[in-house]
Length: 231
Image 1 (cartoon, rainbow, N blue to C red):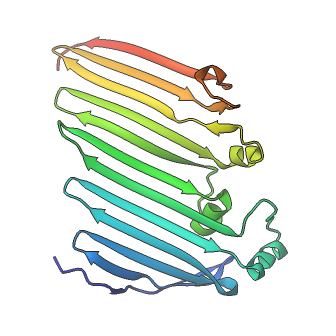
Image 2: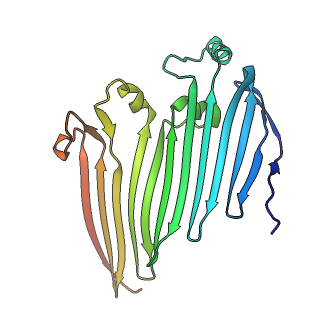
Image 3: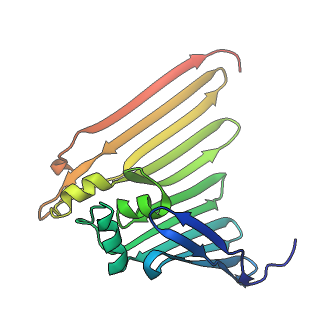
């Protein structure tokens, strides 16, 4: 393999009906043989700059990828948006996004995976990523796979921007993650499926918090399925 070297990567040009002419100049920085950084400033309408940094780190038994983006829309750009019927009433001029992926191999055939997404608001995704979803999902997964069984514990957190906007002035609400446990085992001619799903949607908080103050519907299900037949 060719040795990695720091330097300027291919410059790109885009024409966007909203952001205008956009020029991106990625700079690759080789920090070490097993980790590096790519910084990409993008220059677009009304002298604005979108900053993006991607960090990669390879460990002996793990891999980390982190991406951080930031933009501060100046007054001239926001005036242009409003002149084109874009409502900025609930938007802040500073917008950001942080995405992290981490995967690690653990002893005894276990594997740990993390996918985390955090964003300042929905307008950033819509305007700078062309992502029109109203939510983001972060997940933490621990699993083990062998020839005779598969076990997985998964925790998911859903960040719904519509829910966030409705409750941003009411700080006594926050969201809890969804937890799932899944286990499949082969026992001679039997196959055992064990599933557990804990879905805690909203938790109402006053001075103290406990499980008795859950205000939304909770679902707990546990199913055992036996099937017999040839392997």
